[in-house]
Image: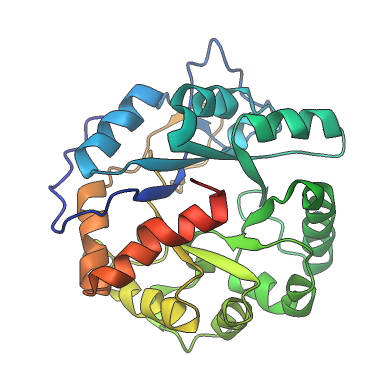
Length: 292
């Protein structure tokens, strides 16, 4: 995709998993939702495989992106193509039939995403309703609920999130601000969910939460999350890196030019112990997503 990726600076363990990627296009085959917040370009399975082969990543979790709404065909087709090396996270609504969920399970889906942040949904009562309804739908399948939201919502819903009947997976550091460190308002609520074993957190896309080159100040947050519960932290690239500030659905929004080799190498700076990196890259994803 025109981005040069640096060599990874440590030996990536066998079975390492990138827990947060998206696949887009081709647009002629997978129509976008008219109500989407942004319009992505294509990002193919072949490009994803080339990236992971270069990084030494053997497993992947494809997260259904918001521009497709609840039409999961692009994500499911990608997961089917990748077979046992892939799992997926879908987006559903009240109209999604139970039989459709069972079919998704056969295709490798192990969770549903409630994207509150992109939708601009910051009202705790509305967020609670969405999360609880999603959890009730997927609990019989043994899935989890994944959410992209911020620390304010997490803190406001702390008790409700503890009571969810399924695990919660929090995207992208819970939108914490790296410059404010682990003592920032609301971060303690996220740490509490991890300590209770009720949530996982993705230390993914640190460029979204940091203004420093290489997201150097995100390491303190990553270590605090791991210290809260080393069994509940996973890593992801967020490839192909949508999420720019220029939200105009009438135009194709360019992906952020992120060096994913440098992003993976950063794990060795944050976690010099290879045992810790193996937990984050291999053991925790295998448990959460049901890899063999």
